[in-house]
Amino acid sequence: MNPVVRFSALARVLHWLMAAMVLGMLFVGVFMAATEGPAYARLVALHRPMGVAILLLACVRLANRLLVPPPPLPAGMPRVQRIAALGSHIMLYALMFAMPLVGWGMLSAGAYPVVLWGPVRLPPILPHDPALFAALRHLHGWLAFTLFGVIVIHLGAALLHGLILRDGVFAAMASWRRGRRDGI
Amino acid sequence: MTEPRSGPRKEGGASGPASLFDPGTLLRLGAIGLVMMGVVTAFAWSAGWLSPRRLTQARMMDALAAVDGVHPGFRRNHAKGVCVAGWFESSGQAASLSKAAVFRPVRSAVIGRFALAGGMPFQADAPAKVRSMALRIMPPDGAEWRMGINDIPVFVARTAREFRDLLLATRPDPATGKPDPARVGPFLAGHPDVARALALVGARPISPGFGDDTYRSLDAFRFINADGVSTPVRWEMAPMQPGGPAGAVTGQDYLFDDLLTALGRHPLSWRLMVTIGAPSDPTADPTLPWPADRRQVEAGTLTLDVAQSEDGGLCTGITYDPLVLPPGIAPSDDPIPAARSAAYMRSFTLRAGEVKLPSAITPAMIAAKERP
Ligand code: HEM
Ligand code: HEM
Ligand code: HEM
Image (cartoon, rainbow over all chains, first blue to last red; front, side, top):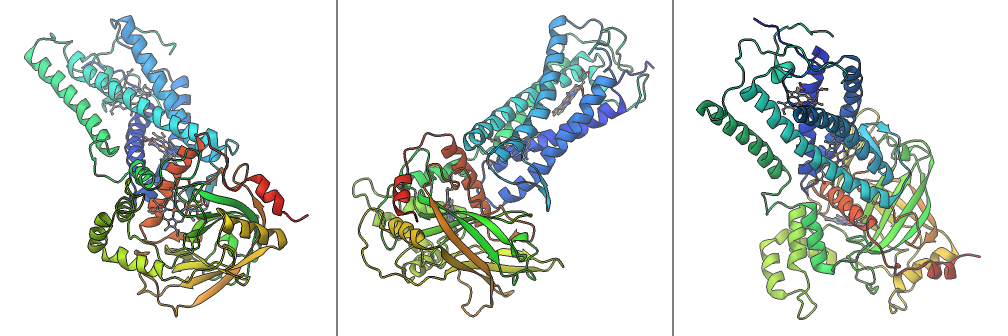
């Protein structure tokens, strides 16, 4: 049996953990921004620390990605597809940083305390500025919809590789069997 | 990304890509499409796009606008107001009930706002209009506490939906400019709790002005002390200055004029009285008063000595979200504070991004009454 060329274990663990967290945050986010019910308070209280956790994990993930090169894409893959893959991954990384930073920044600009859990609060990262608050609140929404759109396409592309092209791209992230490139 | 794009990447046992028109491939393509559509549909459901009946922040804003119109740049409710500043001096007596920093024997800075309920920023003052006090209390080191409190004995709805329905039922008829009795009557008949609460509000004693008024939390919260003991509470700000003569109740801004005149002469003070709820007292329903004999603790004294116009004032660029609470104060099972938190952020987002007309209470009006 040919060994599978996979992402490092850390990359795979982070990918699936963060996939669940980011998708969860998007669903929680749009739900809480569209409810006057009692769940609002509980969801916002969950949304803030989860978002900040994603920011921290994104730092670890980016460092890992830069230090441990990902497995190469299949040899015969067309150039456009390579560019699309790289471009969408860059967008996903950028948004994994931008979403929590904009969330934190908008609460700072709106002079809201950024409560994580009980007495644990983050300092403001932007000066108090109501117009900036409004702009960032809208930006948080638009970036969230962009992120969701990219993820849906990413999901479709991943399934295309896994179910139809079967070129090992899906297995590189999704296979649990040991392979040659298993590092960290 | 510097890795050479070559090398094998084969899945164990899997053959290469199949023909696109192979029936199995078409089936898989269909499955992929279904998965993608499923995710998008679930997202649309979460966002409320498939639920026209869900009460969202946007629909709450629409209901407020249906009553009072849209006034860009102003708060969507309690639109006419003035900023104030001063301090809160804790008595230390509530420290055994709540570990909040504001209840330690310290003096905390306060940014506040007096307002009239309703979304019309230029409405004329009148005795029976609901008045409010909003406070942002900031202890020297410790977490801040925000509140918005009204001069009525109970709130007029148990849930956000009931409040929205009340707004829509009492919205003015375009023909008469007054609520339509044909809409209000059936609504109240179907909501006896609202009718009872409105009767209590209508029967309240009305004080002459802002300065001698009593403002109440209406909503129930929980105080948590250092041992983790949780106590249901409501609170009120009880005025320490006597009521002036009910005198002239004329003039577009007479309530605010009186307030500015009083603040121009001397600081105004209120006692923060915390009511301790019994286990049997309703916390989830702000339309129900608690029995009058409940124990009260005097938690401290609020003193306000400065007025500022909203235009450029410190109360404009924030929202008095009742869930901005320090450790030691927590929400109860009252559903209204969460609804308020959601609505206030939406109102704040809208108004902070809009161009606003000058407020009714102008910097010039305040300068004219200031102490020399
Ligand atoms: C929901 C199901 C998902 C599936 C099936 C999936 C599948 C995959 C696969 C197969 C790869 C490998 C692509 C390659 O070899 O170039 C990959 C990479 C990647 N995925 Fe996903 N993914 C999902 C969700 C997400 C989500 C929600 C995010 C981000 C928020 C995300 C971010 C990334 C990134 C950034 C990469 C590039 C590799 C890296 O540096 O970690 N994925 N994904
Ligand atoms: C990966 C990280 C994050 C994602 C994916 C995310 C996603 C979302 C989404 C989808 C919305 C609803 C947007 C709309 O419908 O307009 C939202 C709203 C919000 N998010 Fe985030 N968010 C993230 C991080 C954060 C962080 C770190 C904070 C704060 C520290 C935060 C605070 C908020 C707030 C306060 C709202 C507004 C709620 C309201 O409108 O009442 N978010 N977020
Ligand atoms: C579901 C019920 C309620 C809704 C939808 C609602 C809505 C609003 C909105 C949209 C604002 C403007 C916020 C801003 O732009 O900063 C506001 C202000 C205010 N509300 Fe409510 N409210 C509700 C219940 C209550 C209750 C129960 C109280 C009193 C206990 C209250 C007291 C106040 C006060 C005092 C202000 C003015 C705060 C200030 O001066 O900035 N509200 N309300």
